[in-house]
Length: 400
Image 1: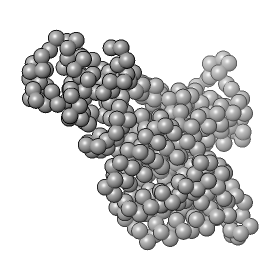
Image 2 (image 1 turned 180 degrees about the vertical axis):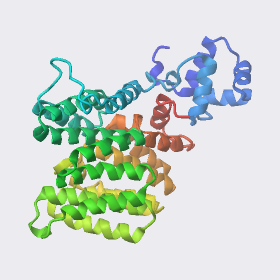
Image 3 (image 1 turned 45 degrees about the horizontal axis):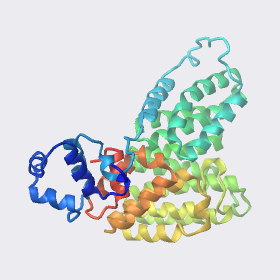
Image 4 (image 1 turned 45 degrees about the vertical axis):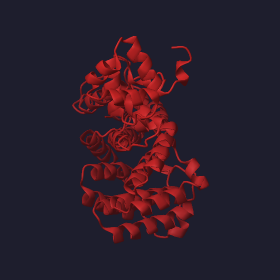
């Protein structure tokens, strides 16, 4: 089809119907539509704005839905993360080191090297390269376990960080039970080190909230926060305030999930005071804590309390600040998913589509691999005015 990429969808339907030797009437009968409906589609009088209709037409014409959109459309490759999750589960289920089974020759890696690999994996996670992280984690888990067995002093913090990373990734991918196991392993490995326990509690509270245990998440986060809270906040270091403030934010989000708006507001204001001392653009303890991070949490909290318009207002106010651009891609794209949901709940699907597309451009895996993103996308494609970019994305991900 020469110059086909410039043709509208209706013309493409007519072209491929002719290629298949189908009359408008036969084509309409196979679709369960009227001949008039087919004629209007082909002339561009009627638009094709539903993914399900595009898929039905493509099925009758025996072509990929992407051909109708004029793009090289392929199903999203999710095999990497899915296979990676199975391998992570296997790694977390191995007790060779704990029961004293000897390691194979040459398999023990120095703790500092495993630590460098874990740092690299954290960076990949913050860039939302989830398939890459999933592929790295099984080896990291085994390597960190053996490193700790060989050098408990140097190896323990490395093992804690690897388990933290596993929990962070798994909760993103909707594998809550497995994320809980990783967080529990991290907590066990961190026991006795107050700061390490507090850092692990960030992931643990996320897992607890995702599993529907908001009250436990809140009490756990607050206990860890107040345990490390500096006696004189004015003289505290930025890493101390970042970790303590992040835990207070987690407690606030749990309070919002539990419907306690007063506690949520009080806790977020407390976190904001700490954030003001830290400033934006830092990533102490992998928290990204700062004033912008706290105000983005207000969006999530408002959503959970059913205050969509307030969530939208905080989103629009916060994302215009410099600190927004300094956050990791994973954090920004994850927030944009919340913003899309806020716009939807506020009755503004146009802006919901806009920020979802922005999320996909910022960090494609955040949209393509997270169950939460697919749920938002499924709502968006039902809107009759959904733009072609959203319809294309839904067709790519096979979202009905």
